[in-house]
Length: 135
Image 1 (cartoon, rainbow, N blue to C red):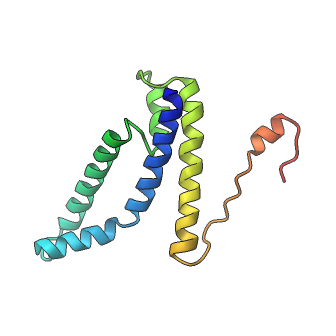
Image 2: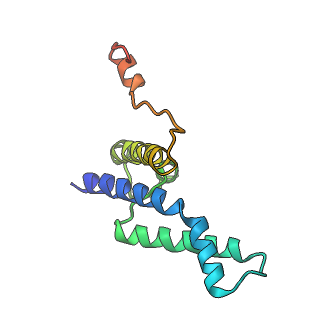
């Protein structure tokens, strides 16, 4: 059950990250306007860095050490840091990647009103191993 909870947490984290990261520029602009930091050249970088730090920390606590970055999970596993096994990575990685791709496609097609990405979710490597054709 812990693996399923981790995969669901990863999916929720990825969804939340895609939605919020699309608004970092707007949030930074509003914070600069509200605080009156227009003349400071390093303010946008510092505010954006702070926003990323806060959101990643908050999401990690709320979603129970979930991660939006499959590369991080794979790197920690390869480095031998305890917490993930090969089985949990096999469950979490597709949840992160597929959810991220679906949310990006949804964002670009609905919010920006045109389709930027043509994402076809076919598991051709599985089909090839099973001698099936990928349609």
